[in-house]
Length: 153
Figure 1 (cartoon, rainbow, N blue to C red):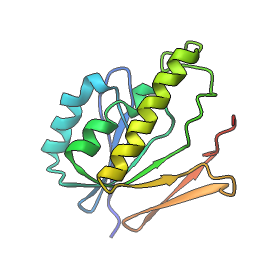
Figure 2 (cartoon, one colour):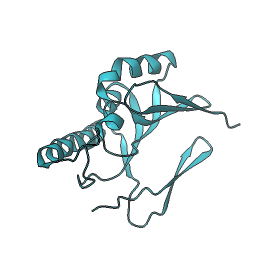
Figure 3 (cartoon, rainbow, N blue to C red):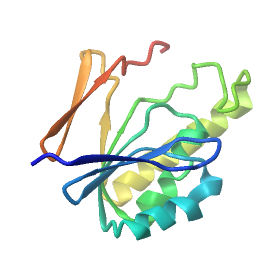
């Protein structure tokens, strides 16, 4: 029986959502890194031992900020994300990006990919050119992602 719960975590100026379905858990975004103690408390309060997946909606630090902490400290099966090219032109604060910012973000992106490989977390890119609608099965619930392509290459 499907029993989806959506927990909107209060991470002040960032986004982090925990999906819960019949004892399985997933994240949609992970909040800013400053809020890891808050995120960790939620994980511990829910007694989460395994995270089925993390879905990053886009690559800004207020969405990916805790992913390294979460993957390092918890068993995460899959990471769903878009390729990062640094071409969206803005920072997490909404300011125009520059070369230094893009290089810093690319370094973090590469560190996330490396960590996933080290921790045996599967990486699934949701912006492949042939995908109009990407589907994620979460314990019997089909999540459909629309407009998941990167429009800037």
